[in-house]
Image (cartoon, rainbow, N blue to C red; front, side, top):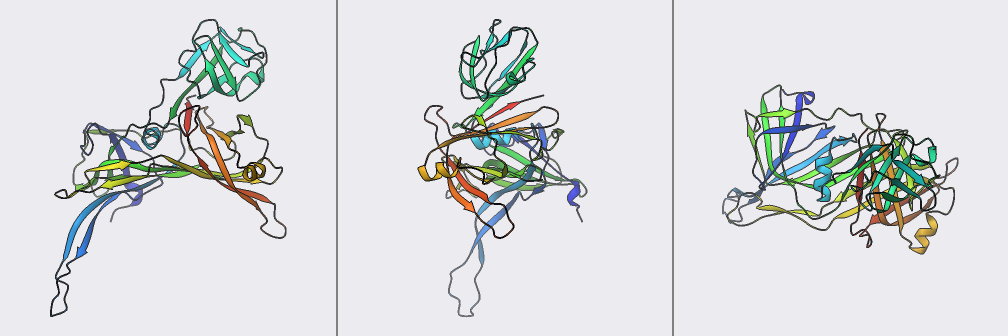
Length: 380
């Protein structure tokens, strides 16, 4: 019998929907895996005088499932891009002695004009300044090649003397559909399950107290096949970056681009692509997987300390939510939900408990930025 510890899973992006391009697959770390292919059937409706059912007829096939994940830098960026139907930007990545900070307009300035790659709406990490306030995570309000006007912290005047690094790229939701061929390899029995035409159905992450940041990626696809040989010529090792925890790997939670001093107990969110397998007569498998409007929703838990959230619920006021996850090596993501409405209440669980606010949230189009959600990333 096959052992769960002997399975590996890898994928490759498809060029043509439903067609395995072959080549080298990218292995991916997972905590569980339910990818599979099934038949859909109907019993014959023929009336028989002997009371037997005349037969069971296959009417369609389906493939898909989900993999469980732990948040690690670079581990699932392809699936995140597919969920958001976008691509990470080339990225701001400049290290120079020509970068200064100015308090007057809360800006970073580069006499070497190396800031052109910054994107309005992205977050980035600043490091290397002698003044601590000028290091951290900042949001691009406007930019030229020589200047970034920023939010996220209050800058202090500092001349361009130390070596400073500004870096970060951004992914925002768009409209480009992506699909994958995914293979499960059961190494101890030399068996392979190959699934083509897999589009991301949803991408979920959960951050609970005293835990590893974890989640899942679900897929809806076209076909599945079993074989004694791989559908790929080789493989690339899975990411080796550390799984991020929910204690010191969550660096900041920002409300309206200001770091919150409240104590949060949980954050989770889901990116739903509203996908549906398209069936057609004369086709055994789905002809494609339609992806609809992006749905971004989640939940917040926070100890009840002030009226920050409850007032926004009562006034139906949107807030800007962002939070930073960064591993011990310095690799990180900034998850940004710019136009978010929350709904919920203060919950009293009974005697000898601490009051906690529990909210659900929905994030929708930000009319200024032109998208619903973004993820900025920076490598160590």
